[in-house]
Every structure is written in structure tokens, then in C-alpha cells.
Length: 149
Image 1 (tube, rainbow, N blue to C red):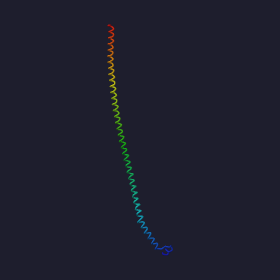
Image 2 (cartoon, one colour; image 1 turned 180 degrees about the vertical axis):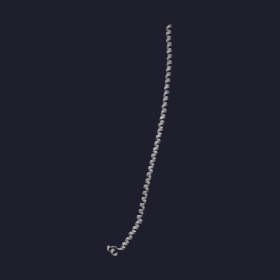
Image 3 (cartoon, helix red, strand yellow; image 1 turned 60 degrees about the horizontal axis):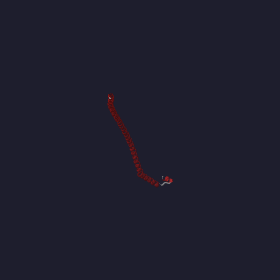
Image 4 (cartoon, rainbow, N blue to C red; image 1 turned 90 degrees about the horizontal axis):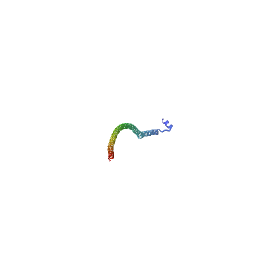
């Protein structure tokens, strides 16, 4: 075997030293570089997985919050519609009451005006009758004076 090594120009002492050096280097790199890097990669993988899980939970919470917000808006819209309907009913009732009150006032004003007109007509009639009576008396007096004069 040593003839084979010498044919290829290999020194078995040097070869053993290189194998030992390579083994020490492989163990050192594994111990000081590969394991810490692998540990760091595992940690980052765990952090990324946790981030994805947190993002999924946040998405679910956002969807729940959106649903709750839309439900609240829906409930608020329904309540607003009820309030508007009650306000319209109240306004219609108030309008009817005001119209009835206005009609009653208009009737009262019309009745009062008719009563005043009737009173004024009666007063003018009485005054006219008195005036006609007075004129009649004056005319009779004048005729009588002419006859007796």
C-alpha cells in the first residue's frame, strides 16, 4: 500500500494529519456554526409561524369586529327608522290637531264676524227705522202745518 501511496505522491502521515484536521474542522464547524445557525433558523421558523398564527387570529378578530360593527349599524338603522316613523306619526297627529284647531278658530272668527255683521245690520236697520219714523213725523208735521196754515 505504501507503494501505491508513493506512486501517487502521497505521504500517509500527511494524509492522516489532513484527515484529523478535516475531522476537527468538521466537528468545530458543526459545533460552533451549524448548530447555532440551525437553532437560529428554528427560532425564526417558530417566530414566523407565530406571526402567521397571530395574523390569522387578527384576521378572524377583524372579521368578527366587522360583523359586529355591521350588526350594530343595522340595529342603529332599524332604531333610526323606528324613531323617524314615530316622529312622522307624531308630526301627522300634531298637524291634524293644528288643522283642527285652525278650523275651529276660523269657524269662531266666521261666527263672530257674522254675529257682528248681523248686529251692525240690526243697528243700521233700527237707525234707519228711527230715521224713517223721524222723517215720517217731519213730513206729517209739514203736511199738517200746510193744512192748518
